[in-house]
Length: 110
Image 1 (cartoon, one colour):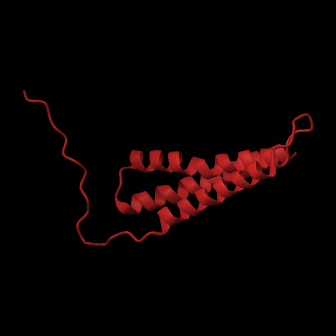
Image 2: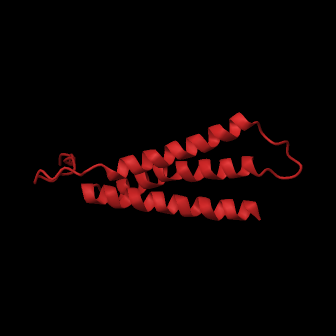
Image 3: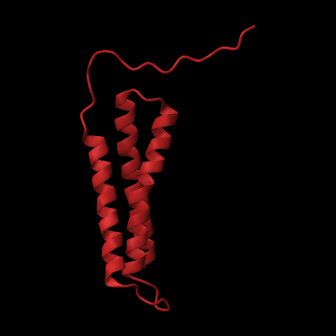
């Protein structure tokens, strides 16, 4: 039961992180593909460490429980990942009036 809760919570944390990063990057003027990729790659870290920490905190009956230092370390890494996500998405977006244009595409000579 704990595994199901941890998995569902990790999926929700991932969805929250991905959505937050995607919206932030789209407001900055990034391309959709870049915003999706960045959201997935950075949004997965808090979810993974939450799942690892839950699994280590409540191990299956046949597994030896990990040390207290390992548990604290996993929960600290999870908290740092959430703080990183919040820091990345709460920074102000510069409003200098000029939108950053995508780099020019080099067309082959014909």
